[in-house]
Image 1 (cartoon, helix red, strand yellow):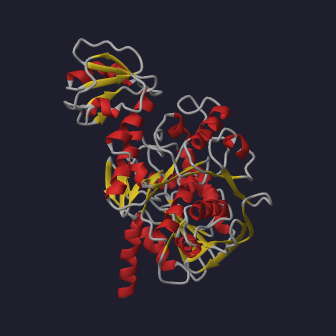
Image 2: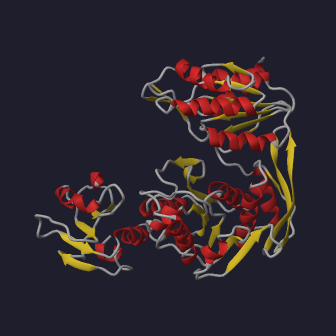
Image 3: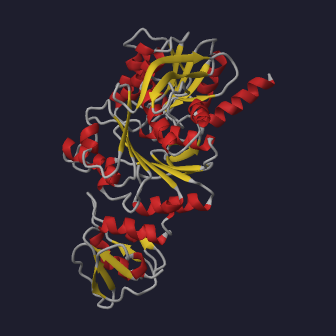
Length: 489
């Protein structure tokens, strides 16, 4: 494409050179520059792409896009100046990939908590209605059965546009993305007018030098989503919802338990049976529904009601809403894995004391026969984490199965001894099974009717890191192999 065509939606100044030149790709990491590409100089907290301008030209960059002056020794180089190179990257990327958002139903979810779960619920419902849906978020980019790992919840705009192009090419009709506050701050989803934007909730988080300077900025960045949407959906039970939506350029619909909510939840209760724990609730207002959700915890009612509001707005059938919520799962987040037997087996990412306490307190509400927690702790990390995890599991589990988890360059048994230091502060029962696969087998072979077994620490990860090497380990595959062995006995 010509550089000029990539820049058509931007106000820019041609500092030198020629904007009517062919470029082969857009690059924002100078290490990846090859001849014929255009290098966009992004400013970040830790580095500034402008300092690599000459390096990019030396590697054959056809042009530079800058927001401030750069020194080069190449008077023939094409240099384009814009107000904000991050905005430029977003708009240029949209053009480069053929504006794929226009071929998709697009939904963006923002909020401090619940983004990943809400996105998964929306996808499950849309897929159930025959609308193939791709997602972008904490777990990575998911297109069909493919997972493309990313560094950020909301990747750089180039990666977002590239992913949407792949989705369109592979038959997707919808895309749902987690719109993080930093993604909004750094223009990573500029150039897209979302069909629907969702606000889940707001609480103190992401404050610091490399993130947001204060809560006011954090809240403001969340509010930016509602300047990029055709329609907005917000949790009216959250005190921040009016502030987040006050400058919205789109109509806003609300959800929550409040009598004033456009879609109201009520009569919520936990549901539990072998192999299924979740929550049931009813809705009125926009729609009268009575869903079961396959993800534990009453707090997930909010995520489910948000997903219902989105999908009804997109014209999805009520049957698909109910079926999709009953099948919904988030990989590695209290993820139920089907196993034979009258117990429930879950995989969760909890890998510190706070997340472990949250998960175990949620599961305790289901009054299991026994709550069994298998976990380890990461090597080359503060020992206090191990003490704390041991103590929490000892207090909250009926049985702890202590094992390995990314031991890195430490000896597994040394890590386990540290965990035992914490668990021995309690009266909690425990066994030690150092090999993680053996520990999973132990849990499954010793589970009793009515037990809830949680395999904590790995979640969506599919590797085990030992002595600097990442070995493949997907707990779902391990479980499937154990089930085959048990069936054969």
